[in-house]
Length: 301
Image 1 (tube, rainbow, N blue to C red):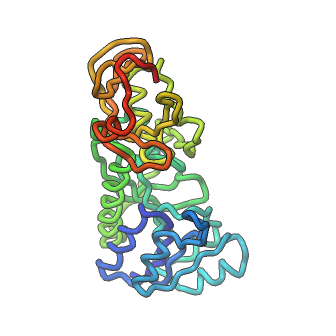
Image 2: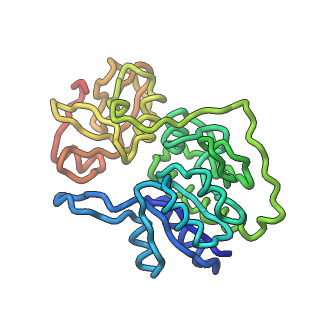
């Protein structure tokens, strides 16, 4: 098929590769414009932009698709379908209607649960036992369109957002290739009204650990916010990001260090910290972290 691909971050790159490997013609790639990044704050192309350029594909990065000129340029590609995954711009109706088969979105949740911006983070933070991928026919509403295909997967007990992100990206790549191969025979299913939830964008204000909460909630917060923005607490007056954890046995005052292995008491139960990062340092396992920054049993985080 002749495809317009629309995506921006790392999550979208395996999908682009899968479409190319499947033999589809990529008429154009749309992504967000280059943004300042790194210490020098120089403009850096998005991951999809970089990959598309390496593949020799035409790349477009308009700041908006609302104008008639951009909509006409989009329609001029005469695409059979647009594949959209974490693109980052709202698609006007004229864009949704331009390809012969419309626009298909790869969404990282089991719709209608977790419509919106941060479905992977929210699934882990809520303690969902499973999540998945939906291939959705896009319409004007926020992730409200009918679903063509869906695939579920269990959320691992110790899985972080980074790990689940990578698994779902690969799942989405495989599922969209499957969907396109039998597009004519798929029956769109309207999303039920029951069970709708919204995955609000992650706010950095959610990242500070409150050790009075139950251990299960603290563990999910740490894993759900890893690697970005990274849950954090203060250890001996210094802010430290907590990037991985697991539930552990133990009781104590909330925030109390219970042993020499960074087991921390919560409001009920305890968590063991498995990956930590101090400002200006790389992420470290507990034994490496403790060699450079000793944390005594009995101190309070």
